[in-house]
Image (cartoon, rainbow over all chains, first blue to last red; front, side):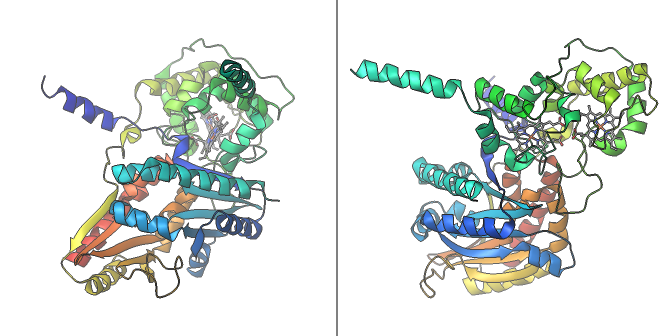
Length: 150
Length: 345
C-alpha cells in the first residue's frame, strides 16, 4: 500500500501525452518567402529583439545535392533576457538563442516556433512565469504581423 | 455602480464569447497546417467536396477536440464548444451541400475477413496496422510517394470521431480528387466493406504500442562535465562531431550577433553542425523539424568548471505530436550522447 503513490506516478508517466495545440506557435503568410522573411525581420526588430543570425538550411541541403524549397532558421533575442536565463536557469542554455523556423510552402510561407511556456517548464522556479508569458505574447504578436502583412 | 459596470462587462463578454468568428478562429488555429482555404499543407486538405460530403459535423468537432495523437494534428482542448462549432460552420461554408448525417449504430461484419481484405487492399497506403502513411498532409516542396498522406486509421482520435457508418460511406464512395478510391467501384461487395469496417473498429480495443512511447522522458537536456579546459573541450567536440559523420558548420559565442563584437561572453560557446542526409529524411517526416536545427552543442565555463550540453531531442519531440519523428529524435539523442561522451572521456 505504501508504494501506491509511486505506482500511480509511474502509470501517469506512461500514459500517452496527446499533442496539445499550445505546444507550438505556427502561422501562415500568404506572402512568398522573401517578403515573409522581410516582414518577420521587421516585426522582430519592432518588438525590440535582435536577429543574431539566419541559418540557411536550404543552401546546405541543395549544396549536398538534395532538392528542397527555401528553409531558414532565424535566431533572435534580447541580450539582457538571454543573460538572465543563462545565469538563473543554466539548464535552458542549450535551448538558446531562441529561434523561429521559416519555410516556403508553394507560393506561401510557414512560421513555426516552440511556445515559450514549454521553456518555463525547463526553467522551473528559477524564472518567474511572467517572463515566459511576455515572451509568448511577443512571439504571437510577431507571428500576427507576418500573418497579416500584405 | 460597480455592479452595473460588472453586468455590462458580463453582457459584452457573453456577446463576444457567444459569437466566436469561425473564420478568424480557423485562421489562428488551423490555416498554418490546413491552408487558408483548406487546400492542405502540413495537414490534409479539408475543402474537397468529396471530404466534406463524407464526414458529419460530429466527426469534425471530435477531430478538433481530440486531435490525432502521434499524427501531428493537435488536440484543441483549450477551445470552447462554441468556438469549435464556429470553426465547423466555417469549414462547412466551403461546400454548398448540407452536412451529411450518419447514425451511431455499430456495423457488424466479419473482422477476420476484414483483416485479410485490409492487408491486400489498404495496407499499402494506410500501413500494415493502419498506422497511416509516411510524412504528413500535403507537402509541396519535397518529393513524396502520394499527393496526400493516407491518415492513420488505428488512431484513437480517428476512431473516437468516426462512426461506423461514416467509415462505410467513405469506403463506398471513396474521396474523389484524392488517392482514396471507391471500393465498391473497385469490386468489393457491401459485405466486404462491412467486414473492413468491423476490422478498423476492432483497433479501438487494442491501441498500438507506438502511442505509448517517448512519453517517459523527463530530462530536458543532455549534459556532462568536462575534465578538460574550455579550449580543449571545444577541440575534442569538433573531432567527435566529425567522427559521427556530421559536418561542423561553425564555432561561435552564444551571444554572437546580440552584442557588439568583442563584448560577447567568451565562456559560452556553441558549435553548430549538421548531417544533411539525416536532415533531409527528417524533413520529409515533419517539415517543422527546423526547431532542432542546426544541431547544437553548448560549452560553458563557470568558475573553472566546464560543462557540455545539448537539448534533449526526446524532450522536444513530445511537442511535435509525431510518432514517426520520435524515431529520428531517438537517433539524435544517441548521437548527442555519443558526441558528449567522446569529447569528455
